[in-house]
Structure formats: structure tokens, C-alpha cells
Length: 264
Image 1 (cartoon, rainbow, N blue to C red):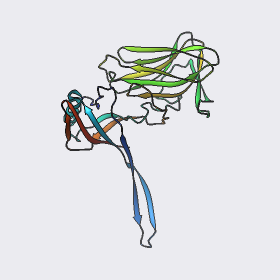
Image 2 (tube, rainbow, N blue to C red):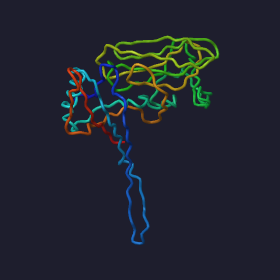
Image 3 (tube, rainbow, N blue to C red):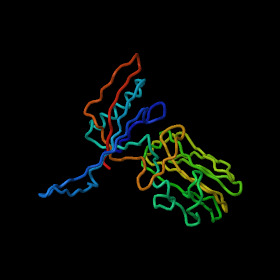
Image 4 (cartoon, rainbow, N blue to C red):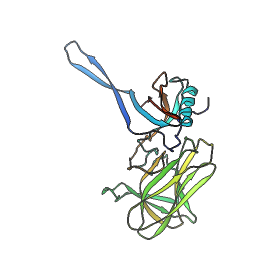
């Protein structure tokens, strides 16, 4: 069946606060005849659970959630859930990871001083003869509202371009200099694709320091959350309830609460 994606609300967010996020782990325990124990951490027994509560939903927003619940046949079919508390990007702290696409003339140097006082930033140099980019592609709805942000600086004043792309493209050119600044590209594409790409483009011969690349399904950025091999996109999520309970708060405004879970 086609990809199923948890809907984004009219407020251009996936969820409302407060959100309760629970991480469960499982340990296998063997008790020996002498009373001693052998413990084993089950790598396949972990789960993530999001407990979500919504209020003041319009009839249209409620219908989107109900239709998604019905399309999944409750907890039966898996769907893709974007964690509203996390960074969607994989390996945001390592631009040399294979998930990042770049040409050979886009050179990376690690261990650069970052704006948090560490050395986790990367110096990116475009040694080519044309604009080049470093990018990452995800299987998520291109039509959602996304906020792409990062910290950038450059020894010499220059411009970098933040790109959000599917069939169409939106780009934001920003000026950077010696001081670290958080730069942002936020908006929606009028696409129906389920492939979405973010990229940072540098002009030929230019060098910039990059840190804290983050993508979120909302209008504005939150604090930076570094990621390693896993980002905040879960393609095997399930509804954690068998029935969707709805309360009518007042005319055309509704509330509901439920859980979503996934194996980790």
C-alpha cells in the first residue's frame, strides 16, 4: 500500500505541547541455581512511545487525524511519524557520513570550533568552478511546513544558500561573516512528492563553517539537537490505541488524546 504519513495540523505543526515521550528498554534475566543472574540487553526489545494530547482542533484537523487512523486500520498498518521533539536529519553532527550527498570538490574539514564552545563544526570549502551543495534527502511529505536551520560563519564575508527541494524548490540566500549566526529557511512547497531534500550551497571558491544542521516539521526552529545514525523520522510507527476518542469542547472545536509507538 502507499506510504502513510501522520498529518500536519493547520497550525503547521505535527503535535501540540505538552508531549510525553517514553523510551522503553528490555533486559533478559536468567537466574542460575546458585542465585546469581546473567543479564542480557535485548537490542530488539526497545520501544519509543509518544503520548499526544490535542485541544481546540477544528473539524478539518480532526477529520485529517480520523482519516489517517482509518487508513491505518487503527494499530494494524505502519506509518511514518515525524518526532516533533527531535531533529529529522540523520548524522547532523557528522557531515562526512554517507547519508550526506556532495561532490568531491566540496571539501570538508572536521574539528572546527563551534558556537557552543566545542569542536564539532565543519569547515566546508567549494573547490569547484560552480556553486556546489551538500544535501540530505528524506522520505517525508514535501508539502508539509518545514524549518531548516543551521549555524554558519566565515572568515571572510560571503553568502550561502539554504535550499528546500522536491519537484519545486525554495532557496534562501544569507550573508555570513566571522561571527556565528543561526540562519533559517522556513516554508512549504506546493508539491505532492514524498521525497524532500534540504541542502546548503556555497559559491565557487568559497569557504564556510557549518554547525548544528536541523530540520523540523514546524514554522520556527527550536534548540539544536545533534543526531547520529538515527534522525527523528520513524517509518514503522503504529497507533497505540484501538479506538480514537474525541471530545467536543464547543462548536467546531474538539480535543483528543492517544499514543503512537515504534520499535527501536
